[in-house]
Structures are given as C-alpha cells and as structure tokens.
Amino acid sequence: MPLYRTRSQQFDDMVLDAVARLEPRWETELAGVEFAVQEVPEPDELADDSGPLPLARMVPGSADPQDPARPATAARIVVYRRPLLARAEDDDELSDLIFDVVVEEFAQVLGLDPESIDPGYREGFD
Image 1 (cartoon, one colour):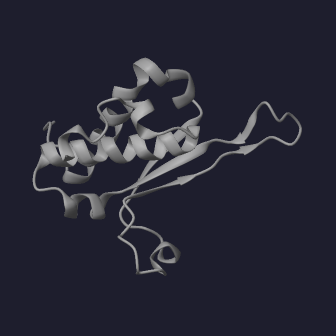
Image 2 (cartoon, rainbow, N blue to C red):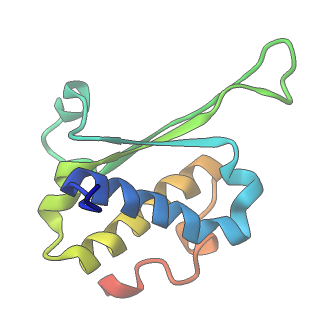
C-alpha cells in the first residue's frame, strides 16, 4: 500500500501537528476542545464582505444544565482549508499560519491572549 497522502490529508496532519505542539503545556484544556477542518467558511460568515475572509472560527461549548461543572458540548475550533492555502506560499509558511490560527482560536476559547498560549506566537510573520 502506498504511503501517499493527499493534499487534504497533509493539511489535516498540519492541524493535528499544531495541536500537538500545544499539548505539553495545555493538555488538560485541550481535552475540552474539538478540532475540525472545513473547506471554506459558511455562507453566513461571508455576509459581511467588509472584512478579510475568515481563516477559522471558534464555536463555544455549553455547560450541562444538570451539572454546570461538566460541558454539555465541547468548544470547537474549525479551521478553513482553502483560505489558509491561498495565503501560504509553501508548506512551511502554511504550517506556521495554521499554528498561529490554532493558537488564536484556542486563546479565544480560554479567554487569554495568544502570546500567553505560545510565547513564540507570530514569530515567523513579523
């Protein structure tokens, strides 16, 4: 069986790698977050064309009404493949961009600044 990975599978792997880079420090917090890849944003996210095309979105989780300490649904971070591919010139830049987007969205989940999630946030983009 060939070890060939499609471009879509390679992108998914980059998202998983970005999450794995955060795990040593944020393992407990990451356990309450789901990650997904979607080709493009939903049409309702594109209704306001005055801003840039979204690269990802965060869907907040909800508390279980029976037990507020337990989440009924996990927070979800959705990464948009095509907008990210369009912004990167090569795989290294794409990997860095995916990592920064994952850091930004994860920071939003936790209510923190991206720099507190990863002190090297956006180093490759200055």
